[in-house]
Figure (cartoon, rainbow, N blue to C red):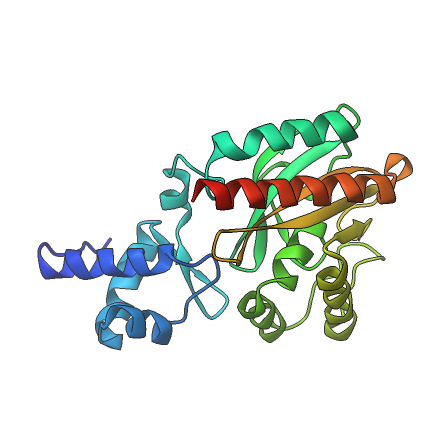
Length: 247
């Protein structure tokens, strides 16, 4: 397995990791070279080493921080877990359903915090806390408010159909994302797993950009979407306000 040489090569590899850490979407080799000032041949060689060591990884047509590096990061929720968690607990007490916090990683949604409800529905994300962006409420929120992420997903190609209700067409998904931006809420109604419905809302950082999605998921039969939607949106707005005040 290749090793990074000491001195300037190590410095350049660190520059690449710092460049990747500033984004939650894949960065192309060209973008990384622009941000770091490295020649393409050097950046490509070092990225190969970083990927081999799990510190970076290929995603679509670009690169992300690797799973090894993200696993070593103690703070998974953007901002402060101590700041966010009380609002999540309040949301759980109000809804009594599973509460999720999600961010994007490549073309997937990653659940970085979960408070499970008693009557939760099993889903394919239970084992690895990841799911496709296009068929989950949290993923739709992240797509709706991140133009680059949305463009990357649509350029990637076809959208896999997880259930018969999955929106697999780019046009249909884009129309739904417009509704998400209009109403500040996204819904996933048995699009990822049968019997599972979720509602999500965006959390914005002090700079105005989306940082994460807050979602509530539960059995379709017991999800009162109107009432739960109000609670989810209220919690997301309260977290956004608290993050701005703490900045």
